[in-house]
Length: 459
Image 1 (tube, rainbow, N blue to C red):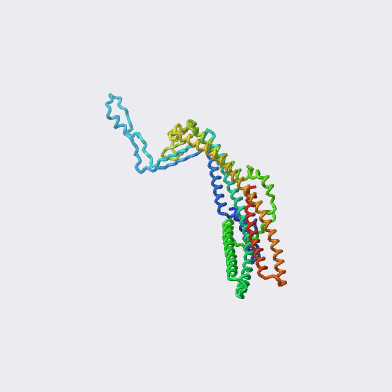
Image 2 (cartoon, rainbow, N blue to C red):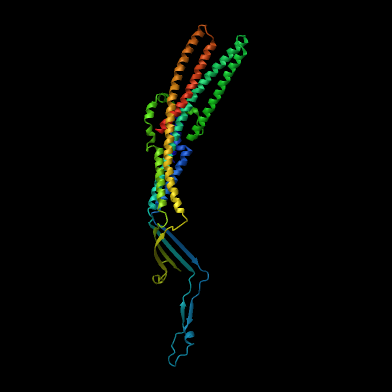
């Protein structure tokens, strides 16, 4: 299938690189996902089945040829029947001198039945006129193939967006993990200093407990981030079909600057782009409307008193020997030829045909409603994402400025500590605040990525 050639290529590259630091890029993972994702494979099977159904619909235009051959062996065939002329003539009282003269040999009345008997039948049925149902059925199945292909393409787009969001999330989770690790070291150092101060009688027990809770909070946050990373990895493994994929094997750097500088005002002005009939979703929905319209037309042409016409030709032979090799075959009248014009029409079925027509017309209206509902849903999702992105951009810029302010405070606390006019705890707390803001900033960027790539998938 589609996965064979590039899969072999990837294996060769891995073998050549050996123990090097080679890792999957975003393009590599997307390519692997498109070839190995189980959901996409299921869609491929659906497309193939629809193609076969379309071929079957085309076959309805051509004649149906049925053949039947039977050979019978007769264990007790009827024997010949013969009479002697003398037996017949001898019972007649002939006038003198008029009695006929015979040879006395038997006269065969029935030559007897042979032990074999063959039958050959060939019938050809060709539709002549069906009120356009055959051509409409072909059109319906062809359009259905297109719909299935668009459905598979839509899933590819959705999975690609989901994969990029996961990669973006994984990258920011790694940054949060690093910040928490640094924060944990600082909290442990702060705990050591606090315990020393308590032992020397400089602070109360409550401060020691408060610092201990701070350490536990960082440990808990680290565990939560590790769990989130694992869930992201599970999703990536499922999407790509790489069950052994690890974070270290992924080479991805998010384009944060592009997401934070996206002009949300222009995005609002161009929201009509998401409704274009060239978009995969709406192209598929338009196809669904067309398919249901054709189905309604077929149902209308199947109503009462609309007969279908077909020509049927039957050829047959029956006899004790194979055709054309029997003795005196041309005069035995063992062959048959019949040509029939067949008319088939439903006269009345209690109104089921009328109900079917109503259902098909209702299905068309439902397809139109589904399209409008999809437009409303896309519009809501797009506007919500644009609105959220604008707020998140402001939030991210706020934390960028706040982290710069944190660094200035750290520089000031460090200078105080080195000059002996400020305690180390003030410097540690300033650094803890910086890492806390970095964590919130990275969490904001995760949401920025989700909204940004949602917008891009709809445009």
